[in-house]
Length: 608
Image 1 (cartoon, helix red, strand yellow):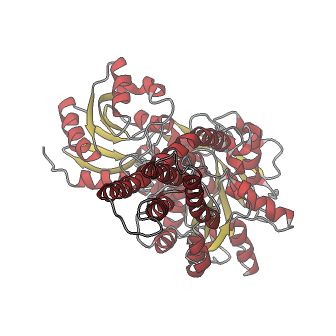
Image 2: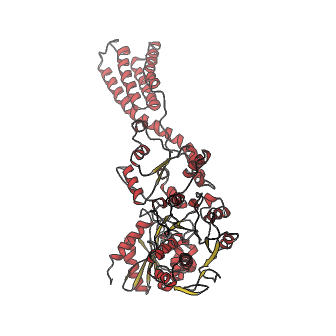
């Protein structure tokens, strides 16, 4: 219903919530939803409260009813309270609802009134003038009730005028040729006015209602987007109702933990959180462990859902990416290793402020004891705060500064107190300073889990990276093509721009607030920009102010060959897709955009 109101607002809301957005076009919507959910290993479906037509509700033909019948392997949630989200108001009012019987009763009553008026005015009002009175009644019925009531009024008026007032009276016969003409003209004009006046009346009612409707829309937008509005959406209402009923609210990682312990397994749990780098660090640690032959399962916020992971044996290891939402819904889960990468402002609409956000993240360390590890990034002001008072042993990590007792990067060399561990220049999938901290965290965890230094170095070098996150998709004529489609705003595009030499930059899409001005310190690295989507002209204007040449390609299909040609002409070594924009003007999501880029690069000739 949000998308029906304003697709752009719905997309902005989804991004604020960290949700994946995809457009489904299907004749069988329930089947499409279930197929989409199963493909992504979803376990829960949440439906907002709607108002389908009454006949659909009676016949069980609503979307919720269809999903209840078909979604046997999902947990289906319905919003129990309309206050969960502001009701979507309509800018088009409903037709005026007169009682059906009363509206039809007023038609013969009006005709009878005109007939009585005709008899009362007999002698001074000519019989033929009564036709105008009947015609006026038809117009009134059309404006008040619609064309069908007006048509009935026209028919009854035609018959009564002829029967009561035209000679010969009290018969339906017509004696005068002029009366034939008058009745025919009356019938034609009455029917035309019935339709025209009905439409005009409806338009007037809509126009009068729009001012009030716009006021409701403004209030709706204020409640939806205003400070503190997002926590009032669907999950909060269900959670409050559950807590009020004494029902615990748990995330699926908690359920996995209970299932593993109930099966008698002492498998270890590693939880990874932070504002940035969670997915890369989770995938990297999983890769290091799997390559070393450890029994390991990965999931959580990264996917697949934790509840779907297998039960591992005693020496198994679960590597779980944990969001702040998941961490708030733990009760018994104790992480043997908790990795806190960093903390910068995010999800403030839910947590209220940075201390609230930090408190949610700190649940990662709940229930840890002296035999557990807290691996904490020290590259922001929150790291030392998280390290204070921990019951677990703290292992500090950093992407640039020495950390006694921990792991850190010295340039591109990872080290600990015993000396060098690995050279990140051999890890092609981990470019940039931001990945140095991610790698340090994964290496610290791998060391704690018993991996050798040689195993770790080999694993870092073979790590393939995550799709759409500085993914190296190919080389043509010596030019590297990098897919960083996940970069949907300027902040997330900055690491990629900082990680390579001179680049031809493919950017654009649905712009975010603030544009790309914040990237100005990195503009000298751009040999030429090739711009796409809605943001193309605005980005071109920003780049022009800084003397950076830009080309408006419009679509990604046109941008890739244009960027290839520009890279060869400018001597740039890299073509970088790091759009700094959402993708919804041309694609269903950043994954679809990245997949299209990969396919377009594969189709390029070696020489152009």
